[in-house]
Length: 248
Image (cartoon, rainbow, N blue to C red; front, side, top):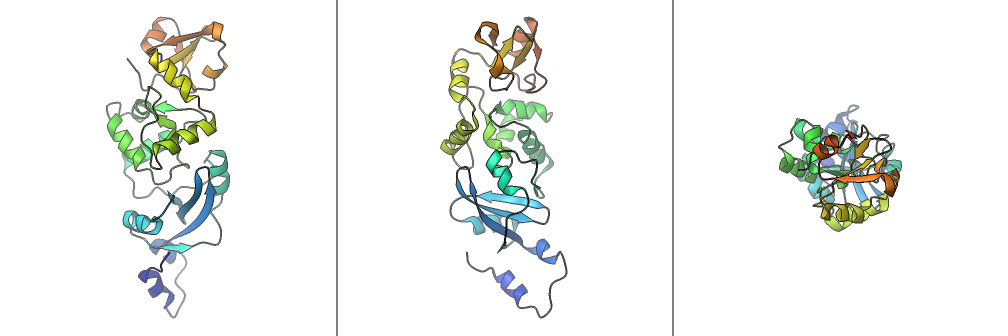
C-alpha cells in the first residue's frame, strides 16, 4: 500500500500531534483471517469502519470515507472472535456517515442469529418501512462492515440468496457453513410454504428458526402466509418474529 501524501505531511511535523488528532484525520488497518479468506479491516477510535477483501482496499476506503489509512500493530478488541464465531456483539462498529435508514437496516440485520435467514421484507417491516424492500436491498449492498453485520443472512423468501458485496457464491458458502438449510428453504418455497408451525407449541416460525428446526415431522404444518397460520390457530414465534415481512 503506497504512502498517502497527507500522512507523509503529518510525519514531517516537528511536534507530535495532539491526542485524538490522528483518528480524526486517518484510520488504521489490519490484515486478518476471515471465513472467506484474508480480509483487510479499517478501524477508528470509534470502532471497525470497513471490511474488504481483494485488491483496491485503500483506494476504496479513501473514496468512501475521505480518509487515508495507517497500518496498525494489532486488530481492535473483539474483531477476531467476531469473525470466527459470526457473533459481533463484542466488537465496536463505527457507522458514522450512514443515514438513519441505513443504520436501521443494518441494526435489524445484526439481530439475525447465525444459521438463520430472513427475507428482505422482514427487515423492511421491522424498521417500520414495509414498502421499502428495494431500498433495504440497496442499504444492505452498501454495508461497510459485512460479516460483522451479517447482511448475508438476508435472502429472498424463495430461498435464493440474492446479491452480496462479496458475491452470491460467497454468501451461499457462508450460510451453509453456519448451518442454514437453504435447500430445505427452497424446497418449501417451491411448495409455496414460507412458514412452519408446530401443533405441539401452537407457534409458527420462519423455516430456519431454531424453534422450527425442532419440530418433528408428525407435528409440523406449513403455511403460505402468517394470516393462514393465524386462521388455523397458530401464533407467531416471539424469537424469529415472522409476522414481520408477510408473504401472501
